[in-house]
Image (cartoon, rainbow, N blue to C red; front, side, top):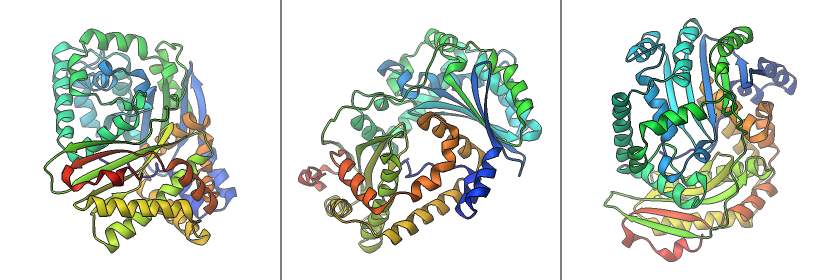
Amino acid sequence: MMRRIFLLPALALVASVQRPAVARAQADTSTTSFDVNGLKVILRHNGSNDVVAANVYLLGGTQQLSPATQGLEALLLNASERGTQHFPGETARQIITRLGSTISVEPEADWTLFGFTGIRQTFDSTWAVFADRLMAPTLDSAQVELVRARMMTEVREERNAPDPLVTRLADSLAWVGHPYGFAPEGSESSLFSISLDRLKRYQATQMVTSRMLLVVVGNVDRPHLEQLVGSTLAQLPHGNYTWSPPHMPPKLGRALVVQPAQLPTNYILGYYTGPPASDSDYQALRVATAVLAGRFFTEIRSQRNLSYEVDAPFVDRAISNGGVYVTTVHPNETLGLMRTEIDRLQREVVDAEGLSRLVQQFLTDYFLKNEVDADQATFLARAQLYQGDYRAASHFVDDLRRVRPEDVQRVAQRYMRDFRFVYLGNPDSLSRDLIARF
């Protein structure tokens, strides 16, 4: 599935679109940060309902991996569902089902998210299972094999689905020789080769509190959360892990990989490397891709009906990607229009009033679509890791509004070049000369 343009800010920021800065500053007091025996915790208290989301971000992501260990952390965490020290066998799953909670494992480039969503009344009971899965999974060999087989099937099915396949290929091509080129969910061969002993060693050596960032959003108070964390996760070894973003990749230049496939349409995805999240250009490029996406939609889908899906994605990581994406039966005409719109963005300064309206519409749409506590937790985690302080999340709206038309033009000129393309479909329909123009 395609990665969409913006990561959505926290619900507390929704009000900041319409309320004055004073009210926004007051709302920010609901978020606090503290350590429990060396484990970093961010808590955003939200008493408007009884939903609670608790996410542990196991830091490192693909930096933890090698070609042979892709998917290792995901396999370990998924296997923990099949039994722990205090909840053997099916007990863990049965309890979570009965409570109506959900526990998720989401391997990403910069971390693996292990989290749950439940309600305040069952928070303690869900936490007990959740924490035990991190601390003391049984890792029974037969159960691990069941989970391994399921994950390999999922990877195989994604390989046969055009969108996930083209995204995986484009990531690999864009990040050759870089950790982001690894698949955090694993490949068939890597999942097959990871031994039970390696899983157990990883559990023993890498489940340390220095690798963990816990973010909780919902109707839970600090003293109670401190007590729960102190009696469970904070008992793990501290370790000596220090988070740092991955290194910037070398300049690789243009590239094209063509994957022949008999499909009703052709899939095209090309990435370029953007700035790190700590760079002042990061938000400007985020806005520039939104401008470009809107122009693509107008020219390619609305006016010419050349595609049912077209985008200028922005990939939100410690090091960003921007790109172009389209599914079309007319790849050459579509790529020509894309190139024209990129040229126009690089050559002309966008209208200031139109840019302001676009940013406002963007903020409104995405705030409304991402109000849930789990999204707020990830937004806070990104601010903490990428900018060094969770409070930077409260600046998101102002940072976007500060982007000027000249900034959009500048970042388009600086970053929208040296695209690395993956083409999935009929090779005879593609003019390679067009790709060379990107």
